[in-house]
Image (cartoon, rainbow, N blue to C red; front, side, top):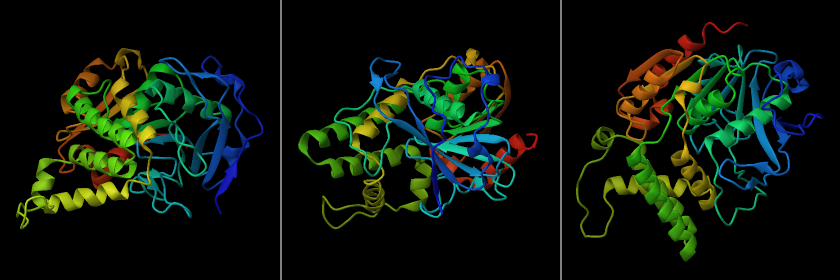
Length: 355
């Protein structure tokens, strides 16, 4: 049974200046298995670019062994707190990496995943306008969750894509909280071409809102996004170029993209997508301010996070542990598809964490 738990101690303010010695471990950390944790957000939570966050709570989910070293895991903008297979949510978005005897081994580690702001799901009314929210804002919300749980040290923060950006922001804002960062397919800033692609997606979403064709807009924006996640080589191998009988009919690759867009319509809302897409393009960190040891994992075929941007990040980090560079047929989605490669890297990086 899935448990939804609220610790009786609620934070009254942001934990940025709270010393680690002032935190006491929550009883939630001593409970085995997977359960949700709901943490109140202080009223008037300020956002970097002005305004406040009116969301009432941040929701995390603990998986794995009670009392074990804690690893934070965060993924792309489509990811949520269900990182591992559960009774209620199917496989989870990264079950290839997180599980029993998996690289992030739930018999050895406690794993915390969390939902990004703005919240989304049953009973949540979609905002009329998108928020202006940064990866630093997301990192500060994670800090509320960790402080509430009484976590003095995070053994590792493993972040992929948008989650990797949040990991970098967390390392910048809270340099002593994580013992190491593992950043996959994310850099210290977005590439202008990737911003251009996302900008087109946002205009599609805005057009859908203006015309009342929201489902079609979400689907079409997702179709475009899929062409940026993957590589030309993969598309060349998977699809032939045989023309349909008449102009205006779909080519085989178009049928695939249409199905991907249709499947995504219940995964997000236009306003939330606009918020998180803009957050990616607003992302900036100063690598020199990140003092925790960092492992970088990049893919030479990634067009959204080009390997040259990760090389620049690597050169500027004061405590780079290792930089893994690999080709992949799957481009930016490699961290979701290259299970064996990712497993080898994570197993090596996490092997020395004390039990």
